[in-house]
Amino acid sequence: MPALDVDENRLRDVLAKIVPGAVLRRVTPLTGGLANTNLHLSLDGEPGDLVLRLYQRDPRQMMKEAAIAKRLQGRVPVADFLHAERGADRIGAPFALLQWIDGVTLDSVLPELEQGALDSLGETLGRLLATVHGERFAQPGFLDGDLDVVETFSPGAEGLIAFCAHRMADDRVAERLGRDRCRALMAYVECHAHHLDQWQGPPCLTHADFGGSNILVKQADGSIGVAAILDWEFAFAGSPFFDLGNLTRPPLEARPSFLASLDRGYRSIDGSLPDNWQALSRLVDLTAWIDFASRPDVSQTVLDDALATIDRTIG
Image (cartoon, rainbow, N blue to C red; front, side, top):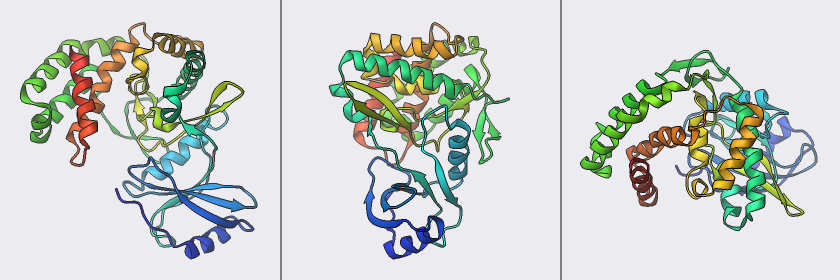
């Protein structure tokens, strides 16, 4: 989705009303966002630098993100929302002002991380994920701005089979994946989906895009820590396997000591994680790759990754 242009004079006027005394020095576009426009606002004065997030794809998600940040504050590193505005009149789109957090994405430093640092990070991520998943809901489904479930879906085997069948009935998906692969994939899901029903945990807060591009890290004195978990717009009430599956995509699925550290960190907070969580996570993560194949604007690189991941999962 094309980034939005913001008139800096209008932006200065808006900031003067929201953060009086702050002086806008520079506006820098941030890369990585595919659905919204994110700008780094360099400011003199309090409250320091900010991120301006312009909601393009689905402005309704803004209040949900703000509510999640408030719910997790002090327990999970997230960017605080200083202001959220539903109207588009002042700068052309609904927008939020978020705390600026220094750091780099995990994706950008992962190839250079030594195993010891990666394992330490894995344990930290396990604890953070278990803390996020400690937010429970009465039923699975999509969340509104008050973090109430407003649209439910079937959990476990039933929901997985229904989702896959619906997506693979789409001509675009069938063409991109190939008819033979679709049949093999559907057979695999129908054979293995029942394992999901063995997990009896309640629906939990699920980030739904918990990968290296949304994990901000900071390195100092040979150690690495998590500075923030970004972009909660897709969050819903689901199972932990969505996030675990996303995080442990290649190349991390091939790092046994990282997986062991992730497991150890998670269990230090929540001991109910099943021993076969890696298999369940790979099974659930198929939904993401099938969904990528259904998107009209998917890149060939992502589609190639989807084909490779599906083939590797179903054997």
